Image (cartoon, rainbow, N blue to C red; front, side):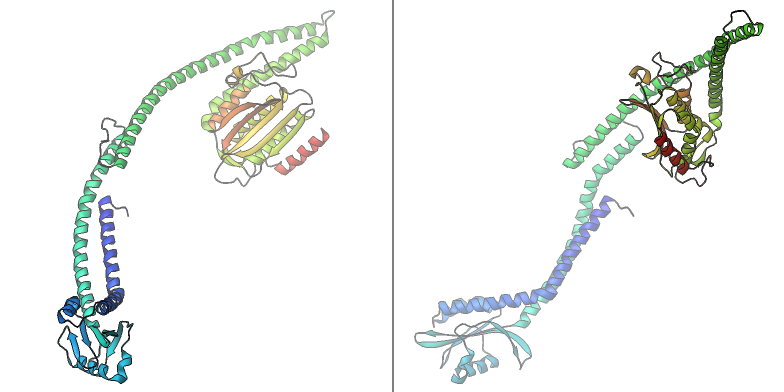
Length: 507
């Protein structure tokens, strides 16, 4: 669940204070007492060194040296072999007994000239004491020093500190949360203002600007970035509106061009009368058996004219069918690999005098209308064959490319001039630099049909001028699934591969 900046900041502050409190409690419970015991030992040893280094039997001097020890609840007793010399506290029975044993020569080994403070148990009272028993020589006589402090006092101090720390950290937790709330509100206020400006920009309202004079560098830079983004977005929208106007103009222009094309089709149909009249005249001359008539020439002319008329009629019919039928396309998921393999196999008769190769990547499925897509593929193939000299090379290839199935046909020949590249996809467009190898004429609708079909399939198309030829290609998006039944299923892709290898070997 998402939380606000204020909530996150307060939770973070509270968690930080709680962690510090837990660390303090753990220290007090497990580490503070050992630490204080070691500190008391060090104090005891330092006090002994001070007494030893500055010793004198003068009472006031000894009192000055042990006054701090008395304040720290430390008992100091100094005596020699025969009498007491000094005590900073009233001696109790325990101290008297210890002194008695110290005066006994047998037990003098309990005192050391380099003593260490140790924690000892007192059996009589069941308590523990930090004790140090030291001995040194002063004016030829031994001076015995006993320093003790109860461990119980340290435990009392630890308990008092723990309770005090709990109260202090509880107060710190409350104050910290309050301060975090106040600070987070002041920190979140400019962010909320930036949020409001960003929402206005998202609603395409650019009148309100973000304040760039904020208290932090990061927020000031963020405000400046939002203002820059808003200015660029407004400029882009303005530019887009202008482009939309130009696009509308282009659409109207294209509609005029389409009207001109339809008019042109009507004119072409009207012009069919001329070759028909020519055919009628030639046929009548043949029928009347005119003297010195070159019958072979007449027959070849009639055949050529009929072929031209047939091609023009077919192209016009195809164009009309495509334009009128694309709105009712029947899309289906098909095995595009098998489909292209079948198309290549059907048109292989055109490659008999050419060096041809066919490369089909298997397993590519697309959503398409097979009738129209087959026409686009065959137009590429027929166009390549008709513009390739005998012995030239043609390569048909289908491969996956950036989420689409890319079908391409390459043929040897001259490159297409750059001035014509953008126009060859237009209807009835022809160039005087035709790349044909025979006397066939085309109506100029093949590539226009390809463009219309591929656009209807949300695909892409184009050509690439290679050093020794031209490659025409189109691509259609791959479908999410895979077709289980191959279209044109009489010929599978492995059969096409076998035919292609055999044909290459024959060539």
